[in-house]
Image 1 (spheres, rainbow, N blue to C red):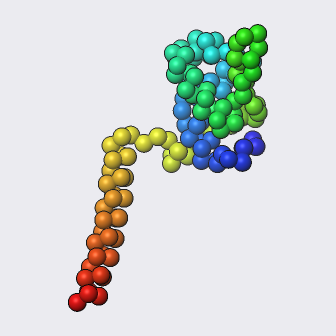
Image 2 (image 1 turned 180 degrees about the vertical axis):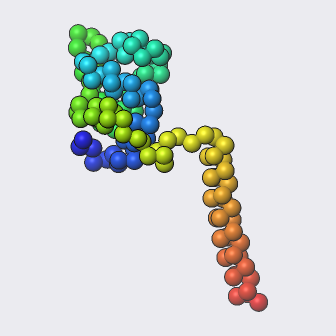
Length: 129
């Protein structure tokens, strides 16, 4: 599937790590639909679907067109269906992390940075002596 130049494979994998976005893509594989139709078929609120559609549109997987006063969404390239229907695993690094893991990673990163600053300060102290 050709990916727009401003989008990396990482972003596509992150987008497809969401069950809702995969379901939206599968719904749109059948035919173009408008927001309420998609929300009803997936069983989610229109606001939720709108959020995910905007993300999919931003990365170039979904396009929209106004037809008879309604905004219809469709897939830009149906090759994405192959990726989803083949049930290729999304690499673990692209799955969202639970909040506690995000905090732990941030703490580790902060600790490394503070250690580096501390080492630089020690070197400066030695030079001043």
